[in-house]
Image 1 (tube, rainbow, N blue to C red):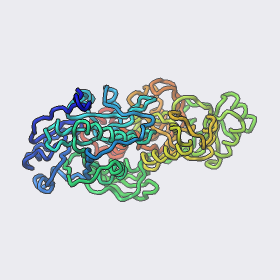
Image 2: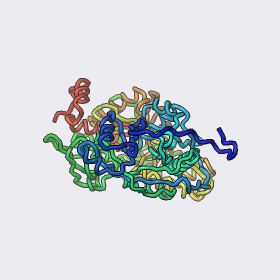
Image 3: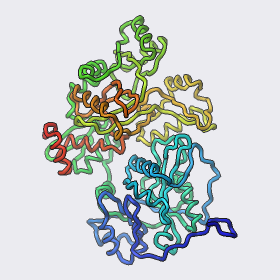
Image 4: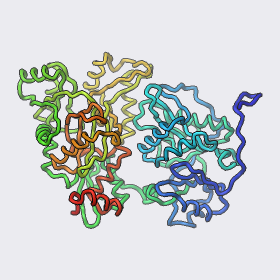
Length: 581
C-alpha cells in the first residue's frame, strides 16, 4: 500500500532479530556471520552443507579464529566485499536499449536463470524453489528480458536483511549476478545491479553489499563505476568439490586456450598430473595410475593417424561416411573445369566452396549463386589447400554433435554472427563492439573479422559498414556459423532427434575415431532430416555448457578416475568399449 503523505510504498514491517541465521537460496545457504555468537556454532552449521550445494558464510569479522576451529573443513574465500551506500546512490538517466528488467514471474524464467547459471559455471537451483520464492519478503529475483525475442539475458538475486533476520543495520545484499555470455545488448549487468539497488532503497535498506572474486576485474570495474566501495568483510566456505579450485592452489601458470584449459581443469580436479608441453599450441601431457597420454586439446593419442588423415581430407571423409549409410550433399572438385562447375551450379542453384583441407571455417564460402562469385571463391580457397571442392548448398541450421567414445555428449546449433542496431552506431561499430564481447566470452577464440566476406554479406543485405542500423534491427554479418568468426553456440542436447544421434555415431564408427565433432545441416534438431557436412578430429569442448564434454573426455582417457558407481554403470552398458590400457 502507498503512504498517504509521500505516495511511496510503505515499508513492510521487519522481522524480530534472529540469531544463528542461515537463508536457503536454492544453490546453498547464505550464513550471516554477524548473527552468530561463537565460531563453533557457525562451523557446525557449515558442516551441514548438502551435497552439490555451495553454502556461503558472509560477514565473518574474525575469519582467522573461525578457520582455527576447522582448518581441514573450511577455507577463506578469495573474494572482495563491496558496499553501495543507498542513501547517496543516484539512478542513471540512461535509457535501456533492446531489453527491460523485471521481477521473476514464471517457471520459464526460472528455467532460463538456471540455463545462464550453467553457462557461467554456477550451481543450479531447483525450479520449484524459484517458484516458491516468487512472493518471498526476504529474497527477490530480477531478470533482463530481450524486448524482441522474450529471451532472458541475465539475472540477479537480492536479499533484504531486515526482513530475513531483523538486521538492525537495515542492510541488503546482491548475489548471483549473471549475464548470458552470448547476449548482444550492452549494459545488461549494469541495468540489473541498478534495478536491485533502487528496489532495495525503496524498501528502506541503508546499503547494498556484495562479494566478488578478487580476480574478476570486469565485475569489479562495473561495481566501482556504480559507486560500490571496498569494505573489510570476509567470506568463508566449506571445502567441497564445487569449491575445489578455490582452495587447491593457483592454476597452472600457462596461457592455455579455452579448449585445452577445460580439459586440464577437469584433469586437475580428479588429481591427474598435468604437464603443459606447449601452451601456445594447446599441447599437454596427462598422467594417472602409471599411464600417460599426450593431447592437443581434445585430440589425444587414442585418435589414430589414419583417422586424422580421413578427417583432414573432406572428400575422403565424405566417401567414408556415405558408404556407412550417412546422407551427404552432392560434391565435385573445382578442377573439373568451368563447364562442369556451371552445370553443377545450374543444377543446385546455390553452392558451397571450401578447401579440401582445413579447419575453423577458413576459406569456406556459403550460398554462392553465380559463376563469377564461385570462381572468385575457388581462387580464395586455394590459399588454404591445393584441392578445392564445390558442394550442394543444403538449407537449414548448422548442428554440431560432439561424440566421445561413440556416444553423443553434446549437441548445439551454431548461428552466424549478427548484430542488433541501436539507431546510433554504424554497422562497423556494432561489429567491433559485438566482437569484443564475443572475444571476452570465449577467451579470445571468437571474433568477427572485418574482411571482404563480411563486407559482402552486409552488402547483400543492402547496407555497407558505415550504415547506421535502425534500433532493434538484426543483421547477419557472416554466412558461416563458425565460432572463430563470431558465431554463437546454443545447446540442444536434450531435444536432438534420435536419427541425428544415430547418424553422428555412424560417422564416428566409419572413421573409427573416439572423439569427433560431427557437423550436419538440419531442418530442425528435433527432426530426422539432415545432411552431413564434415567431421572435426579436434572438436572444441568448451562453450557446450552445461554438457559434460571435458568430463567424458577424461573418462575415455582414464576410466579409473571416474567415481566407482559411474564406472560400473559404464562397464555394464558397454564393457567392450571401456579403455583399459
